[in-house]
Length: 432
Image 1 (cartoon, rainbow, N blue to C red):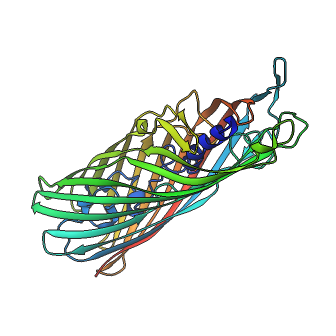
Image 2 (spheres, rainbow, N blue to C red):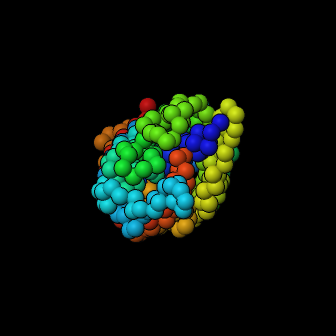
């Protein structure tokens, strides 16, 4: 297996993960799994009840009075700008190599496409203690796209990732003070990804590589809720890491002499990465009949995403990633404005797990603040309509990465990233 094939295969998993970068939670995780939760910046979900909180805590459906259903739709609108600040490429031209500016359009506007994140769930009351639930979500689901002449082209052009997460949950009310829940997770991922490859002469047109890959992976989720009084609920949950595999095909085209024609090829391979675990702790306190305070802390095990491991007929490769664990903080409030209308607001601080040295154009992530507001209208005794809006501000970040391409050129990327996002969410919860 040639060096070019090894390097190309090593890019499979990184491309697949980077597709959801800079959406609404750190790195490539999308947290829009509850419209009600969006309205208070996800500060109360681990301690709230009902199918609308199922992603955050499988114990949320324990002891429900009726069967419940939930459907939500979240529209993410991202404004972003990625600007070149002196990136270079060194081609392996004897005797000492030829170093030139990477060239191309110096600024990429809105490379992160707007997207839609759907989710739905249902919970079924077996008796006054036992409930069963199912949740369908899209926790990693986005597209980034740069123009073919962008200065990022050797690192990223198009990255499209689609995932479907299915949880099957069993919840049990031990007594009036304690609820427990456990679930099994199945995650399907499908990726379609492209980037450019430099030929040996800057006068030659770029080559290209493309990937199509998919695969299933499995994990689990557990949770509990403690009710020391009617006014206070404390919740805790843990969503396991997932060892994801992507089986796909890498296709290379457009490489010109003196690069051997055999380096244009299509090869099958498998990429392995580990998606992070997520631990949540939070509380809801009903101060009185109108006001409820919410707070939560989430620890995300991003250090599990330590490397990309690729295997293929005749070889293997490992690419270190250097992600770090992060802690997210959120606080919010619910206000019962009338018997049918509930208003919400909240804020969340979410730091990035990406390293300052090694950050790529594919994951141009930065620390972020989220500010949210929302409402629920009880249309009938059995139907509740939810709506929310959130604004996410990203701290300015730096792209700072050096890579050797499959054609043995060294690309040193340096750039500035700015961005913000607005999320519009709407959904419904109903009992039957």
